[in-house]
Length: 145
Image 1 (tube, one colour):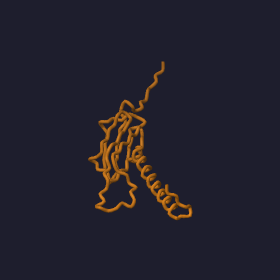
Image 2 (image 1 turned 90 degrees about the vertical axis):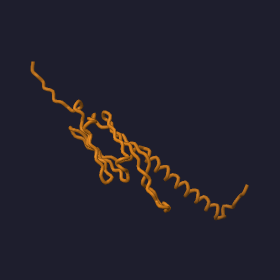
Image 3 (image 1 turned 30 degrees about the horizontal axis):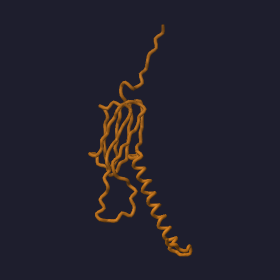
């Protein structure tokens, strides 16, 4: 067994290297958990009596790689964001995630899937989700007896 004196500067140099490696590993694991936690793509949702509008930011995703489904009151967006080509360069920092994603949003009402409209432009997906007729509020008249 090799022992070193605490006064030897290499003892703390090795410890500092281990701290750097641990810090890098923590950043990688944090980024991976965010990608898999369903937070991508970020979405804004607006509703009114006739339906909902959903806008999702997803730069770098091709429209052909998107699959959108609606079942009752649940909207699901699936897709894949491909990794950028680096042309042999070393990556200094990578903060933008890549890979497959699934995002499900529950709406406060059922949607008419036959009338959903989707458009994608400049990295923004916009969905118009009309409320199902059976789920729209109806006024009930009351008759006197």
